[in-house]
Structures are given as structure tokens and as C-alpha cells.
Image 1 (cartoon, rainbow, N blue to C red):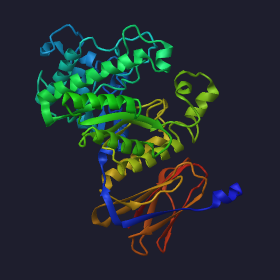
Image 2 (cartoon, rainbow, N blue to C red):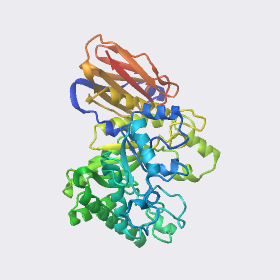
Image 3 (cartoon, one colour):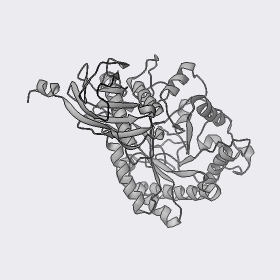
Image 4 (cartoon, rainbow, N blue to C red):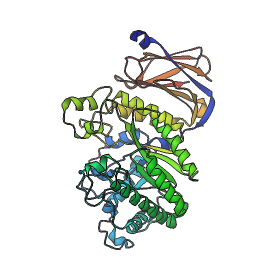
Length: 474
């Protein structure tokens, strides 16, 4: 078929506002970052709040708070040979201040990652991410941290922080759970005895910490982890099996995902639910706490270590870039799918204040992905129910309802070739007025004309790039 005819053809999907299928879950729209201690402008804070996140996860916060000792366990308890039960040996001050800003100024709940930020220092050079020598003592420092923030210990707080995560990406053994002396390139690329030893050590560590925290805090907190690099069945099987054998249940399991298929995370959640249930952990929650678009036309090596200007331009410039309109539409489609999935929570990795994993560049120009996150945050704030809708090919829809009969429809075209999209709409009175907000390569949440007649909604993209529309019916 002629490509122009394909482009002109209308994609057809359906939304039925008379059929409610679930409730909006704001915790699906959570962030990997929050405010910083210093160099934080009023506009930064306003922008962070504008994205409307529910929770903020504390991983990697030491990396964006330069020269500040925050969050990581060796920053809070810096001298491991000292008494872990003596409050004088802890350094909570900077983390206290940072979490207070996050709670009170940004209005986010806290999801606390116990452990360390990532260390990109090579295969042989590691200072903070080596496997701890004394698992029991580290578990004791973790318990002290929970006690400080939830029970007021060591001049602390009674914040009732619910979620506490054990470590981060231990399957990334070259930069997160590294044996003394480091690793060889072969160990990092291929299965090996060394990798098996690292995994076995972590499983023991996980169970040790889980049992220690649950013994003191019981059901007042939720403890889990370990934020694997991806949905990794080998690691999860070993962890869940060890927990079952030890007679202790994780409250959640967590993992990460950098992808370009908007259904990837929902599909992983289905697999995770089946896996947890098979071990008898039917109440175990499922948490995706790092996720972001990752394009088809570049690799991690390109992003981190390539200095070719043409490669860098492909990653960072234009509509198909890491934070461009294609990324933004992936973000919206993934969030819509996650809301309808078995996932309990999800944390967008980004929203640091500028740079590759941020929402703006060094000249303070906002990336397209900022507007996608703001749009979804507004939907979370203004709507409470999910209504039935269908998706097809490049088109994802998300129908929502609110108080006083308020109704809205998010329509995302992620990489489609059609300029025109048609939606069959049910449950809306004939003659209802519509207003539409458009996010595309040239527009940042601006008003847009749509057609609505005889139950048919017609949306026209201004160009052939990805685009998202949010239509409200009066």
C-alpha cells in the first residue's frame, strides 16, 4: 500500500464512560528524585511540584546533592567499627533536612532506599558499593535509620515512612554489589562462579535485613526490594525461595525497566504476580521504581561513553531523542497502562533538576517529557476513576471520570504514521462541548481543535511525529 495512504488512514479506538473499571492510583505516578539541599531555585521547586508526583524514592540522591552526606548508609553511619546502637555515631542531619524539604515543600511521600547510590568507577575501583563485611551490623544501621524517622530515635521524627527498600540493583555487580578486588570483564559479560557467589551473598544479606527490620517494626512498615536492574527471574526465584525457607515474607519486590514498548512494564507485572503467588506471597506488592524511555537507536554505551557528536545528537536532540516527544508519548502510554496493571507503584527515573535524567537542560529549557509528566499529574489530581477504553497499534487511550460527572480522555499516538485518529465515544451526552490540550513536537500543552459528533471523536495531528491529546467533555 502507498505510504501516504497509510499515513492518511484513520486509527480507530473506543472509550466507554458508562463502564467504570477501577480507581485512579496516584502512587503509580511517583518520582526517582525530589528537591535538593542547595542550588535549588524557587522555579525548580515549582516545576517539581507541578509534575504532581505521589512519592519520591531516595536512591542516587547523594549524586545530585554535591558535597552533602545524604541517604546512603555509609554517609549516615560512616564508621562501621563503632557501636551501631549508639545514636552519637550517626550523621542524620543532611538527610533530615532533605527529607523535610521533600515532605513539606514538595508535598511528596518518602520511599526510602536503604543502601548506596550507584558507583560508575570501573571494574576494579570501588569504594561504596562493595559487598559489606558484616551483614548483621549493616542490618542494625538500617534498623536505626527506620527508628530515627519513624520513632523519634536520636532526635528524630515520627513520620511513619511506610516503604523501606533493601539495596539497589545488586545484579549490577560491576557497580552496585561488587566483591573485594573487583571483577573481570568476563565476569560482567558471562555467567560465572564469581557472579553466582555474589548473588548467593546478596540473597543471604536480603534475608538478614528483612528479618531484622520485621522483628523490630513488624507490620508498621513495608520492607522489600531489591530494585533489580530488570525483571530478573533468576534473582527473584533465589530471593523468594530463601525468604520462604526462612519463614519471612517480603512486603514487596522491586525492579527497574528502561524500554521502548509501553506494555513492557504491565507485562512484567503479570509475570511477577504469578511468581510471587507461586511462593505463597500473595500479598507481596509489585514496584517498578526506576523506569524511563530508552530509544531503539542508541545503547547504554552510546549514552555513557561515546564522544561522537553525531551519536550524542541522535540521543539528545530532536523528536526521537531521550527526552523528546517520542519519549514523552511513551511515558504517557506507559503510565496509562501501568494504572490498569497489577503494578502497585511506579517511579519515573528522572526529574532531577537538569541534565540527561532531568526535566530540563543546562540552559533551563524544559524537555518535552516535563510536559508529559505534568499532564499526567494533573489527571491524577483532577480525576478519581478509570473507565473502559481500548488501544490499538500505536494508539493508547486512557478514559477517566471525576466528581460532578467530569470526564476526560487521554489519547496517545506513540510513533504512529496516521495523521488522523478516531475514537468511538460512549457515555457522553450528544452535543457535549469539548476542550482539548495538545502535546506534540511543536506544542506544549496548548489548546487544540477537535471534532466530536454522533459519538465520534476526531483528532488530527499537526505532523507525523508522536503526539498526545487530552480531551475533556463538559
